[in-house]
Image (cartoon, rainbow, N blue to C red):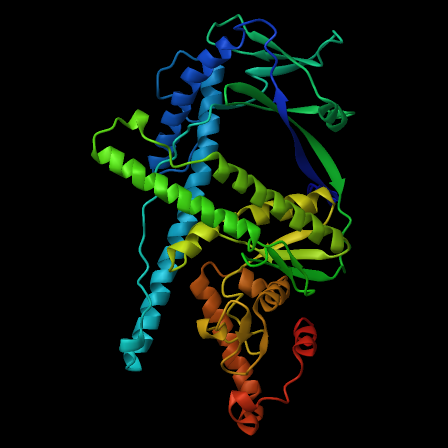
Length: 475
């Protein structure tokens, strides 16, 4: 007899993990947390060793890797260090691979543009620089962090009303775990009311103080309807978010840009002073640091502004399906150092993560699509060229004359790519460009007679309005 296939229920819920942060560990007895300091003094170097090992290995990081290095830690703590190092190395290697693939595609694009310039005899005006690759440095773990599980850190409910929880932490002294009382603030109590904690626990130390992070899982019902309208979201520096509905949210320009410029000049002066003192033989321990608290505050402020922009976008499009770009900030580069500095300070990589989190928290559907050439592709004829975007604000197609605000056009293009299976099947940006140019050739054949009657693109004044064309192109 044939076994009947088990019918799986359709998932109507999406699980999100909420973190309850900034829980300060209370030192009930003087010197009680010294055992935790002694533990992290052994744990962090071991985690660093495995992180370096995984990053340099040819195979992918394996959190079930057999122990390699000797340590005073217990087998359970040793395994936790391996798992934490594997997660760090996996993230680093993925970002590095994406950046290197983008570099190879930039090299191929540069070679193609150079060959075209040579064929047309305009090498004297060809000022594009050849892409260069800078190898990534190995990650260095500086902040004491222990990403633990129930095997080494257990959160126990307190029977005494003085404290809310007791934290039982395995230490170097086998058989004698450390018990630390945990006192929750009113905010923490509201967040954890009626919740069941999961097995994930994080301990980290900043400015001489140990902090605890607890987490719990929550099922949020998906509220987006299958026929919900799609809203494209473009990410940028001028405006953090620009939607296909012609709305803009947040900006790095203005006050934040001025603060970043001031902080950048300050750090450059400190870097020059550090280099000068280093030449004079001053020990490294006495050299001034190039980092500053002002830079850290500015970074937090930028992320807060991004969070506000994302929350405002989600609030205005509760009944929509969000389509945003699968952004790889690690591979983005500008010719000018100042623009690269602004790119780094704007934290664009935080936007997709926050979009996914905010949408999941509200039960909204949010999807990523390929971002390749979304700012250069013409939505009417699919022609791809950098010259289609003469400046930051304007998009104008060189072939059909289609013109629109650049960010809004990019958001509309992203919305149109939702459900495009052929585009999603492309494995590289070169394949994406080849597909778009194929569609452009098909468009030219269909509109050949119309193009001949119209003449040069400047005279194409009888084309349908962009809104009418975009609506018909999604059918």
